[in-house]
Length: 454
Image (cartoon, rainbow, N blue to C red; front, side, top):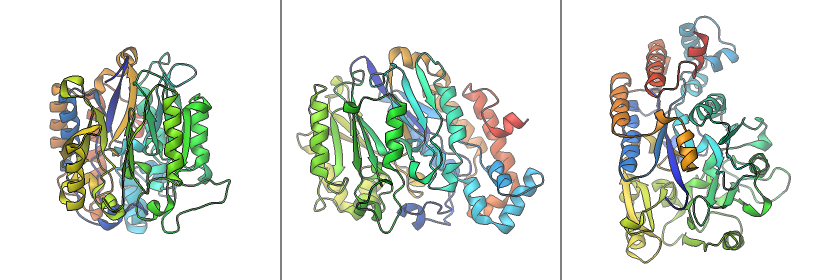
């Protein structure tokens, strides 16, 4: 928490339909765990435990609600008719893959919800949000309308916050949100350098992955930079290495993480990596800071272990001077279970570099679907005035944590198979739970489609 602003993390609350339908081609964990039985209750409690632990360490920690699932609206758009229960039954009978997409709880990975630029970087001095269109996957392309509603409810004051609708869902404007965006700075409240990573440039020929699709386009990243009013000298665009994408690195946050003046990345993160790092160093030097890069070689941690452990899908958090300064790295339990990864991490914190401490969390339910600590959170830099202007009901404290764990325990199933998605009772359970959640968080009663329809 540096300067006149702080970095808040808003984690997505895992939804009641958390399941393993294997919907995300290119995400190795999602594919490998397809059709396993999930535990939605445990998934939500694991996420809440991480939120509470970080709030207890003094970080500004918020929560964002899940989306309404099953999405009956999607199924109606695709031609299913009748009352809501009939729609669910007919989709299960004739198009179970579409029902799986309509039931996805992937909105818990709020790193994909939006791209956020702090007020220190924007021409109008407001925090800018652009909801991600996520158009590469059907189950995620249906999120952005509710995402926009949630973000507008969370950050409602137009004097401090500017909200942009998702980019058109055209393939050349594919946008996956903050999972491909990092901000570097000398201090959170000072002007920074915004780093956009893309998988493909649809207006130029060049290297491209051959096995898995590149989801983020340069054109989408450029559009967001323009929408947010970022100066050219404050923006760096870089291409994600296609070999990494083909290894299962579907977003940049699976192979790199940054915070403040620190970048922690694999040697296979970017095309022409030496030039990318030189540009970042130059731009950050112009802002009065020296970029510290921790570049992990293939010899130290293979790309296979990188994907299997989600080493870089970690949270890099600034420690207070009282704690000794430097950075705290929040990693999933899977890092401890991979010997090469854990040896590397132990040597990392034993050295003299900026990462001084490790914090390990069990997020196995999320990890099995392909999302670790970094996937679960949206980073929002806020001044004190902006923090006060944010919706107060979303901040995690003892009271809200207790209320949310009680809510999860009462409403969530502890076992959910893909075949259970056909149970029409699941729809009623989810709507009852979400209706109560909006009251618990003080978000009113028109956030979700079923509330507005009523």
